[in-house]
Image (cartoon, rainbow, N blue to C red; front, side, top):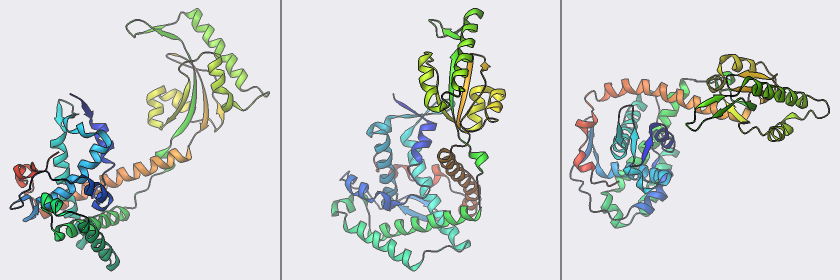
Length: 352
């Protein structure tokens, strides 16, 4: 059976905001909501803060998540397994839990909005009502029935998501989390690598003889002299061609964080690389597996660093929010528990 790692699953969840903005996937919902059997709305799927959340509301969230996952991984995603430290976990069950968790987060944020003074403006209220009306108008009678949806449910979900997102943004904005260039640094280097080993039939590393290793060292010195020659100092343009000339199959560009740099080359070589300037070369440097000439294209690559800054900032904001959220959840509904608060039998009427 095909499996998906926790790392991949985490990546896929970046497609789904913390508070699921239903409007972003309205067109997908309208295209994907055919008759799947009538859903009984005589009971609630979730009870939270002594209030019932109907199957129609849960269905809106579920269909959006289902559309996102199937677009990313294909329709067979629900047969996949998530690899844990000890075993493989059913993807559908984990996703159902995430859907409920997402709904609870929205509810908690809407409640908390009053405590931190967040509300929708008149214009935002009007926009939410307009979008709910447009969404409702585009549903067929069959779709309304199959999802057990009412106009009030659609309006509530859209409005609550708008308020939850605004509250979340206010909370993390007030935290004033900033990431420095040093913390987010992405460095672009070219590793011209003269390998001094071969691989045997089992894939094990076999070091070259001292004689052959000396041959590789001399080639590395010769290459270094060529690169720093005043005849042609445009090293970046020629280092790849020079690697091809020497038949260096493991030479290539890398974009690495300081942690990745140290993991790849060790602390000594990593420290040396960070002493270099942009558009400069290291001396011939020996490692466990051969000789290197490092070309530093950009000690701090602006685009890659800015992208990582945004990722790290978002990660720290989530961590900050998660710490607050745990306390908020306990204060609002200390008895909430997925296994107790969710009507699993009714939830299973929403097919994956």
